[in-house]
Length: 468
Image (tube, rainbow, N blue to C red; front, side):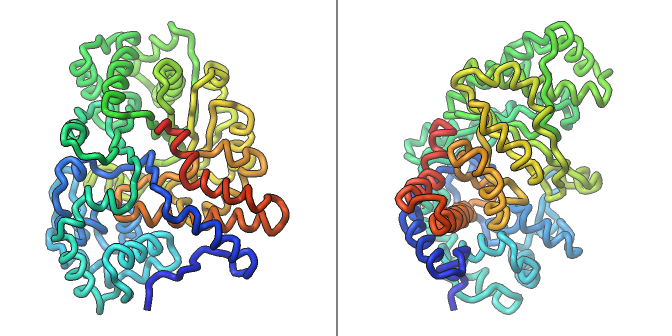
């Protein structure tokens, strides 16, 4: 019995379903534009085989291990490395058995859809994963991973990825991207400039990070002007490796546009260690506006991922580091928070700022009206906890009537889990086609227009917004 229903995520009403099917057939096989994500560039640079099923599916994917942790399974038992990079459990089969025996926990979740899609379409498995089938799965997947057709570059081509962007720290030397570029391989893998480590005073090792920024750029980061020049230099370096965008993961969307003397004084307090909590937040706010100004200068698209309470568990953060599933959404203000930035550069021609949120309550009240008038603003797709069928549907319903389709940027998968990329794009395409079909049947969109919009949402909008 197949793991996947051919009509999954389509409406139950026959007429609407028929239109959704017809729309989907025209976009199902379009190339994938993956303009924002966190896959490891080492995979594409070295093109080594993935070690085992557990390291392919379980240990890198916080969607998986956060659910398992919620049911009492420890990160150590899942092979997740600690803050020093050391894994307690290294037996891939043992990790896989723990995962398989708890697979029922993912019923009804998008993670289940993504995993079943990978199991069926990549590994030709049509038996449900469970404790009883764990060894069958492990052996089948291991056998395939030993084949050249399952190396990263071959899978990249099989997934029909036209372009993929990874995300690197401002301090990264981009050695893997250099290897990719020099290899002669035709896959388009670019980087994205993520400066949080040298913008956020609360980032671990901030002072050392600033010193390193000065070393690698030759700029005097003891001065505010030199510090901004260091960002200019690093952004140019990233553009040499294909970067078209920056990414900013701030706890809030607050921006500021301080007079130069006040900004310099704030920078001095941040760098000498005397900054208060309010100072540190003010500096992050100021730097969002400064980064927007730099985007006006160099044309890089700016992404703001605001509203996550990062590393909510101090114990997990200390033991395992960042990005271990304990980031939690929190309320986020955009109307007043973004005003200083928008007053400064919001009407500048050529500037693109893509907004993401973890606060769905602001879709229709704040984000859609903002994007519906400021030419620089675009709305990113449902992110993280809302990268799910119902989350995507809520997004379309709440933003389209004010911002339309063309102030959004299609879909991006934002994933560390390589095999989930085609699955995630497939889910987005199905949900969008279902939404468009409903508009057609209820007389809000002509059918020929729906086919055009489906193509735009699946492919063109992301490519154009990210200048790919």
